Image 1 (cartoon, rainbow, N blue to C red):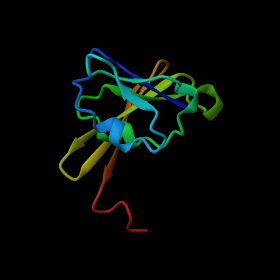
Image 2: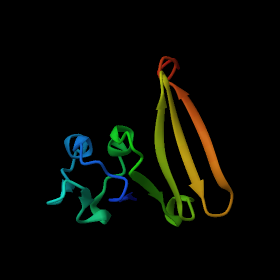
Image 3: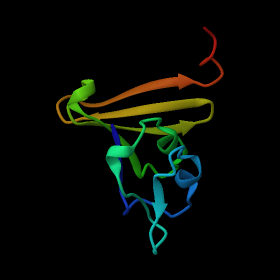
Image 4: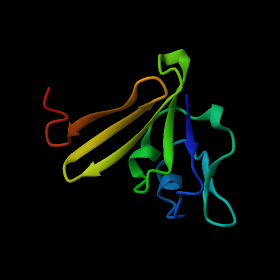
Amino acid sequence: MSILIDKNKCVGCGRCTLVCPGSLIKLDINRRAYIKYPKDCWGCTSCIKECKVYAINFFLGADIGGMGSRVHTEENGDILKWVIESPESGISVINIDRKESNKY
């Protein structure tokens, strides 16, 4: 599991560096996020939930059935959208209502 960071989208806010439990994400001299050792990523997805400009994607490799798909999140009020971009089937969206997420 790993993340992909698009430096062209990164605005240098540093939120991802603060939430990474492994302290794996750093800011370069231009304040753009990067991960030096992607294979060390724990796959917690904290960084993608913090990135407000969708510069970070979670890579779903073949080992977990993702076949190269990427995931990022988008917020809309209480709704957290998990956007899955698959090279084979296009874009899928899973909406999670944060008010209902711990209901069961």
